[in-house]
Length: 193
Image 1 (cartoon, helix red, strand yellow):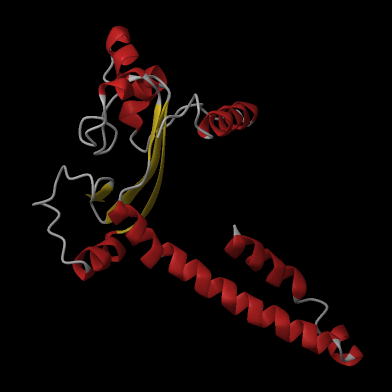
Image 2 (tube, rainbow, N blue to C red):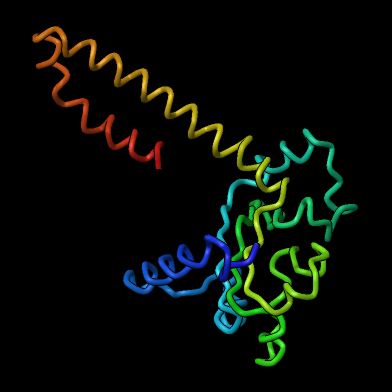
């Protein structure tokens, strides 16, 4: 997806960079610190999540995916086995086009298994900044692990808040429950976030 021009990402990209600058964070980042210089030249930010490998492996086995056989396939790009961890690459925003990167002496096309060539994008895309979205496997891993856990936590907190509301209808129970809501609200905020 193009980042600038007719895309909605241009404004979001500028806002994100401004927020990062205001917080004193590096503007561009990747999960691999060795690529810091490359991400700076290419204006690239890569969002990712790390989790125990067993969680990713369960999803991979559920779909009967042979990761070695599919290495380099865009459908599984961004799900990496690193020691006992699984790194799931989400979006990759690259503000410097591959052509401009070439002129600057840096390869700005391939980012964690996705490139304009692997996606078979037209020549035009080699001249613009792009956003590579998460692969289908990366989305499935998150939906079946982190999102499922957070949704379960959300519904549990919702039930607990409902019981507190019902308890507050009885004045004696409301006094007894005074100390509980702050902890519940903190957990709720974490789950919703």
